[in-house]
Amino acid sequence: MPNRPHFWSIFFFIVLFSCSSEENNTAIEEENNLNAIAITLDITENTVLSNQEITVTLSTEIDISRLEIFLDDQNIENFLAPPYNFILDIETLDEGEHKLKVAVYSNGKRVASKTITVKIDNIGPQLSIDSIAANELICNKIRVSPRISDIVSNVKSLAVFLDDILVSERDNSTDFSFILNPEELPAGEGNLKFISEDDHGNISRDSIDIAIGEKIMAINFPKDFMRKGIEKIHIVISDSDGNFIDSRTHSSGEIETLEFCSFAETNENSEFILTFIHDFNNTIFNFYVYSNLSKGMLGNAINLNKTSGGLSPASLKLDVPFYEDSYQMRASGPWNSLIYYNGKFSGHVSTKFSNELATNKTFISYFNKNIADSYQWAWITDLQSRTTLAPEDFTKSRVTAATFEIDSGFLSPIMKITGYENEAMYSARTGHLLYSDDLEGPTSSIKKYYFADIFDYYTYSGQVANYTWEGSGKPPSRITIPDASIDYSFSNGQVRFTGLPEYEVGRIRLIGIRTGGAVLTAENPSVRVELIFDGQQNEVILPQIPEGIFPSAVTQMFANKTFEIKQGAAENYSAFSTYGDYISKVLVPSVPFYIASPFKERVFKSEGPQWLPTNEFPF
Image (cartoon, rainbow, N blue to C red; front, side):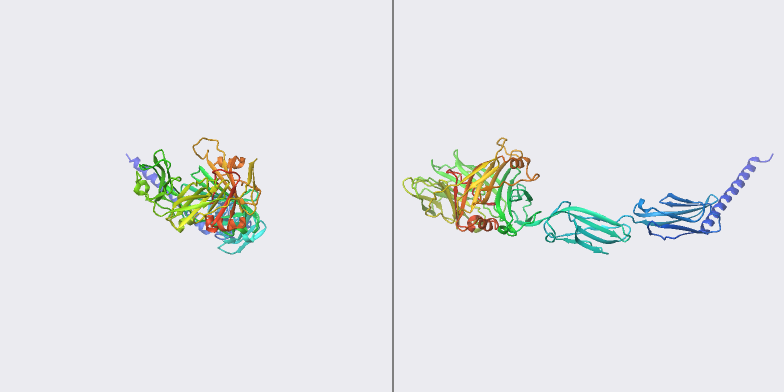
């Protein structure tokens, strides 16, 4: 019997071989057709398209049944017969590269195809800028460096306008930076406009709102001006009515220049208010408000000089076994404060310092004002290492006995004398209190006092009735008390002042009314305001305080004017004749008053122990 399974295997193999050969022949034929048909477009590879008509031509003798156009694999046109012309609407396409494909069919079979890369350029150049921020106030010449690019073509031109004023114009450049000079532009808010064009005529328009200011002044901070991390210095500029103009904050402790400018045009006589705010730990705020200023008084800059502050205070309670009743024992300076109280010499001394204008030495005075020649003093290094004071710590050597005469023997003036270790400390008003007490002598106009004459630099201050005097060196031997008084008021948020002829400076202290308890916090801060102004002015302005710089409790005090007036004075300086002299010779160079004027006198509204306010920023 024949082997039938073998027969059918052979038959299946023959059929399969015949089919495979037919498919291969078809593929070869199609490939030959693809190679035989030439597709030509009237645009080339990487052509940047416009809204032009594109023509496809074919070189073939084969009958063409269909021609398809694809853009990025999306069928956009179909033709059954020539001509093969089409238009791309480039406005609807994304800028950049695209794939344009032509597919040709004959009798339902694809017989040819061609793909090229084309480019669409339908938007203008792209702009980015980091060298200037939206709404930035510009009062100094700066270089603006915009980055401009076009992903398809070149940037042909850039024109920059401030509103309608041409600022810069560049053609066919790769560097589009330009100088923005406020001195050449009108002050005020404006729109900085950038108009750029690429090689294909596409235009972009970008803009940013800025403000052009006129520079008022600069304030230069030295290194270690304040204790970093504990203190900040805020500065606010206001116009003559107290309206906010500009503000800056110094908190780095490094050398820094803060510049201030105004939207409004100013001249040498334009009046404004300058406020320094010493911010201690966001809870204690001391405002120094200088009014009636002008650019002519201040010049271009204030160069602040640093003072000294203590860090890491050590609390002390020292035994004084030799202490006698009715004696006064005291140490006082920027770095220490101690008095004899409840059987101990108690207080604190600093163990670290904010800068080199400091000392680890403590001066202690010990005397009884009613006992002649009782004055003794001690000069101790690192007092925090001691637990007791001994008699041998004190000496009477180099003690000066001095006299002081006033008009009336029935008055008891208060006298203070401060000594300074060196000229730098003297210039920074960082010294040691050598003597502080009232001078007795009810039957004589001549009063006697004592102090340790161990330094080269001294200052003094005194008070009797409503009159005070201060100066450099040792106290004068005689003072004539003027028969004068001033007046002031604070009502409905308005400060009024009546000074004295020829007294150049007026001063008023306000204290913020706190509603919380004794504990100081940002919500319950201590706020003190020192108003310094032309002594011949009658109205004193409280400046507006902007939001965002201080805790809301502080800004609300100023908004609602919840202050009480504590004291006020008219000041007369021996070396000055106007308020402008005081500003230009004391505030601008940032020195204690006695560097520029050896003597000043002050008249208060009423008698009393309040000598405040006493000083200028930052001393």
